Length: 453
Image (cartoon, rainbow, N blue to C red):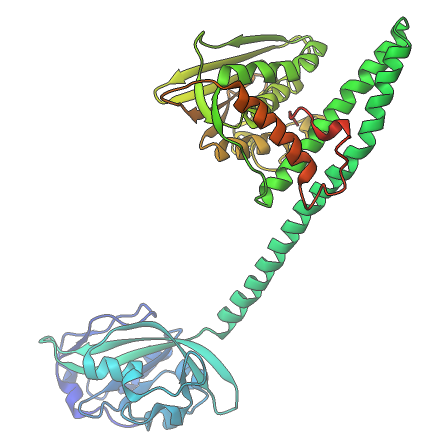
């Protein structure tokens, strides 16, 4: 191996050394290390990256290459040591990151660092090795300077990024496939929900006919009431699935108008009264006597409150208490639904609004739920510029769900806006191009009461 150039006896230092994270600082005269070139070689051979050191103006010959550099380039150490940074780089198989363009001398990191004192970090290059293979490398280079700032050489590191880029490419393909699968899943759920709604219409009609034809038969009336409640529950679940599918596909629209949140609460209570009464819960509703003005979609906000009420009713033992309060705090309207039900663990509070999340502490499958209603609550509230939160002191201590919306500074209620919103919602259920092109307008399920799940 060539001797260390005479100029190396000067006092030199390296400001920082590449991405290998190794620093050299020759504060003592290099003549103290005379004859210790082997030690320098042993040192860079232990660095896990390919290292090249060029030293000595004006030509800055390469004076040391690590074993990793020899393996990475596919060139013997002897041949590497014959290369001068002033030579045309493409003759050694170096190309810019496109793998085609031959770089100019001034573009070579080792040349730029040794001649101009430039610091280079993680530049992408392509190396065509002698065995015919090509690799992608990340190159970093630092100038070697004397204490007074004169550039005397450069240290360059090379990292093989081929496998990393191949992995990133594979991950990109996998990510695209996952997005496509997720979209297909959303479309499938929406289609299933749509198809399942069809059979519910004749079932509901049959129940109405039986109720009218046998008004004096208490047993038959009880049976009809049970079937009717179950049909309503299934319908609401399917409606939520359809809405979630629309949210995922960016097709769910909210029709915003000035409204009184108190009237929305009243409608949500009506939607859930049968379920609450059937489970013998005590429902308390508290709100200020004056309107609570917000800007939003009346039907969707009623759906939010309905989902929270049905969730409270479902996870509270019969005879429990549910408290629904509405208040204004600062510039926000805040709705709270508190129950005396099963409560939530701390770990469940972090995931309770996730789609398809099922309660970890539930004792049976039916108690876990489908993980639809609360996810839809969060989506709808966020679409209104609000936030939703859940609180619980633990299992057996009940739960509280709240959501807040920005208040309107002025409010003039309009019944026409409300009727228009309801009519638009009916049309939305019938005109969803992807899922409901075949849904008959005469089906009584085309306008349903959104609700829990």
